[in-house]
Image (cartoon, rainbow, N blue to C red; front, side, top):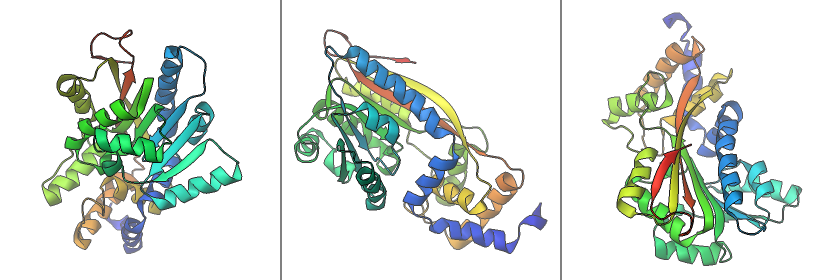
Length: 307
């Protein structure tokens, strides 16, 4: 095993740590099986929204933390009234703007901002709706892997603010992220926890299923149904640089953990021995939480179920 851990391969692994989050997300989107996985859950949510509509009309949607490929084809086609793509990353929005211009997509609106500020509470969310969303409530709001960039303790307030101030009647909030409850070796959750604990004494507390329970028990969202599901995706690329770029994204380097050079060398060697040589793909277990706004005539109490 150790014979194939060449210095050049280790150097490539270290260089891959310099990819920015925009590039890492692009690689993940291209080589992971996640896009069809998320699309299947998203389509069920859109179908449920349509079934609740009392009249035929065009719908609108907000993608929070849109990135450069936020299920674009589905959202742009399904939400002709307006699609607001919101992200803090100007590079991601620039990619979307090129596409918007090239394809003459008049229903697509690009907004740069920080959701931890603009939607942090009801007052802020109300102001953001007026200033950034033309005052319109959204039939769908998505948070696809965007909650990583905020403290889990702030999630319930954020969700309540979106639910009360941004979401339209009969709308839905669709969220997905890596499961914090996965414990199997060599999954992405295990990989993050293994090195975060080894070097920083940390582990992920970003439990999306726990958010569901808190919304039900503490925040008591009215007239809603909260659905959950857990699914598995995998990632593999035959290009070691690209593979390692995604590893660094999962390990949250450098925006959460600034691993030393020696630690990055150890991580790269571990990945070579345990993933690259045996050609083991990265397996990620993902949790979905979808909050459906049903209205008083459809739901007398708050409850939750699995799809």
